[in-house]
View 1 (cartoon, rainbow, N blue to C red):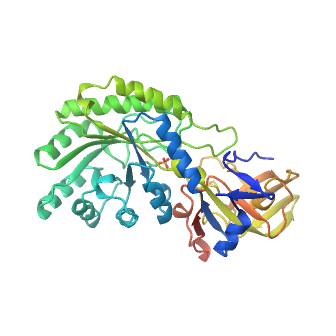
View 2 (view 1 turned 90 degrees about the vertical axis):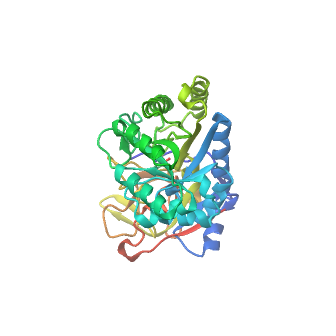
View 3 (view 1 turned 120 degrees about the horizontal axis):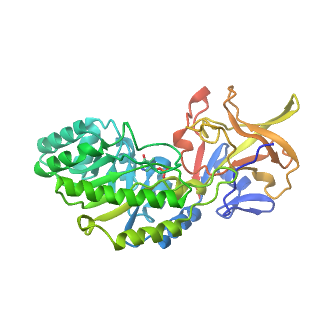
Length: 408
Ligand SMILES: *Cc1c(COP(=O)(O)O)cnc(C)c1O
């Protein structure tokens, strides 16, 4: 038997069924008229945003990293809860503008920005977090050609990363950001060429559950930004400190202690170096805000036994749930939180493996899990599906197509 990850405490049963936003799973599926279906809860997203506000110093802006979930109704809901939005492509920028975000609230990071993307950012007044010297040169030249002052920040590739974080995105050779030692001269150049210099973006990792590791990283980020500003002799109007706040996906994972992070950050803000006294600080979070608010509902279409293993075969799978299947950067596959949604309060009584409908052994949703006995027609819920689900999975694999999505 292999353990399942922890189901977020926000979810309860109505008439024995999983309820999301006060509505039964079967009713939601009926409304969508199909499975698989992603359901995102407005209330849970709002609760996470409010908890963050309460824990963090008032001076800190909270941004949403929309690559976690770009579903337009969710994006519109989040707009009322955060101070800014981080996009990572021209396509995301377009979706964000349609969802009502103002250019001033948006920053655009990501390697390999193409000229039309730079142009869209510069003409609308979005902040570009520049990822290389070449990109800075192109943005400056484009600003001159368009007679617009581009809003430019430098994404720094820091020499450190968050201890024990999920995906590694800082430290050593990276396609992201500009190595620390090259930053001061380039910051100087941006200012000298008359662009609207915004400051630094320093992102050091993702999916950390250890508050002490995040606290240490934030202290390093602040010290680095002050040092780079000092060396370049430039002001630091904005400092995007990255994020990395994780959520519990797996057995024995425990929720992040955001109160500890908030009070350490308040301590940092109380003794800021001279260079950062006027700085506007921000964190950028994706999964922390929306991950636990999403549930993926899929229906059991077959039940079979092979060499003693019971398989529950669903109409969903890795084409919508690449991360839960263990194929989105995981080193070892572990079970996400999962339940039989239509028997949410039934006692577990058998060991079964839940798989998707794709003809590949990679398509697994739960291995050897202890579950209530489920039959064909029952609904399965995969939790922590609000981030990196629908948009980060290969929906067209095997001609399946996307899942339905719904915000409740
Ligand atoms: C992906 C990404 C994020 C969001 O990461 P989460 O783990 O979802 O919070 C934030 N900032 C940058 C630069 C990213 O690439």
